[in-house]
Image (cartoon, rainbow, N blue to C red; front, side, top):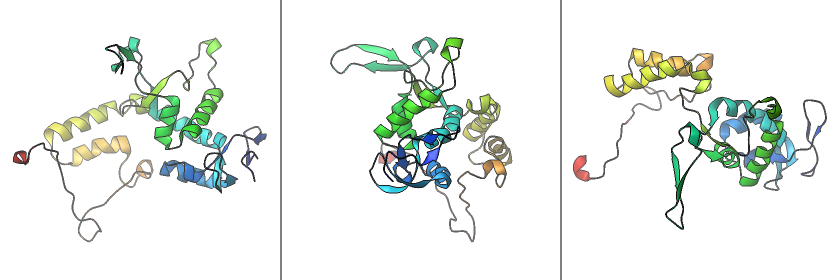
Length: 226
């Protein structure tokens, strides 16, 4: 099978001729695992190797919803952006939108190479369902910059109060987790063993377990401060 041959069909049953990308060219382990069930033997457009992979359309469909949920467009100057840039050749400076351009953001978040990020960016922009002539604003826009959403923004801000209570208690009232702190965190991430928390990385510590202790550390600039 060559890199130009389709390996799947789109939602309308038409051949999917978007570029194939192998799983090995996707550095994000969780994303790679989710894509593994849809993977076929392909010749990767980006590394040239023949191994299991998916089309770029499949990759785009997989990341579209998580990107919309966990990422935001950066604030513009009119919205109080605080990113100031300086010229390398003069004293000139200017303010610009927060975040990274879409290609760079995809490259860093998904851990894919620059060309794959560029192709994926084009596909996400082209497939965005918003219709600007009707006043709708597209989420994926090559002219916008992006960054991860603050924790309190995710899910429409419904965790804002729980996160604020958790952060205040663990920072100012308790050195370690107590029942109330654990309850606040459980509201956000889910309690241990619940379906909501199933995908979270968990490390258990205690007698008879592989890990029995945990250490706290801090950075100091002088030995006398230790």
